[in-house]
Image 1 (cartoon, rainbow, N blue to C red):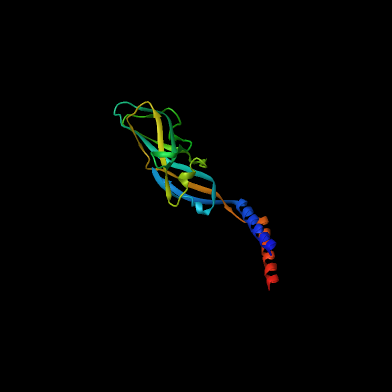
Image 2 (cartoon, rainbow, N blue to C red):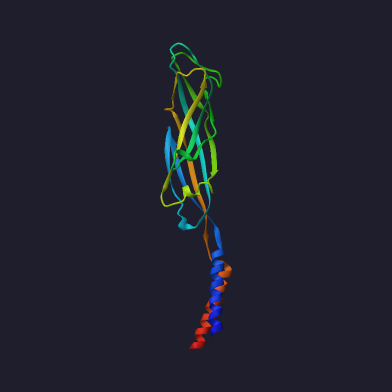
Length: 225
């Protein structure tokens, strides 16, 4: 009887140890936000609940495009404005507990734009306007980042965190007295924040040992009866 109890205790101890070491497959928990921007759109995300398992990765992916046109107005009543370059872009930003952009603050690669007349050396006459269109109508840019483990604490909890997508229109010119109108420009896309984690699960060895322990216990009960 003494040896039987010892064997049962040993079986359960070994099984518990095996179960603690067993790690389940990776689980991917994704959140998706669609957005239309002109000029900025807020995005809210749920934090990762550590009760679900052990966080092993945090990825952020954005697919976005800018389409339409914008207008450059030269407000100088005398001199013409020479535009040598123009582009549009999106900025992705996560707001941390400190100043904005502590966690993440980055531009998606610029998308070229061109005026209706030509692509470089555009002249905007004195006190007049020029329309610029997004090259090829709509162009997509993709941004992917891995936030693990540097921002693990920021993304873990039971609350929400915020980020934003902001649209920028930029020109390089010889003058500074001008205005940009983005009324006809639209930025849209999707952002996906994915938590990758593991959930412990019983291993085959632990299940076998639990089974053997149960058989021994049943045999012990039968002997008593």
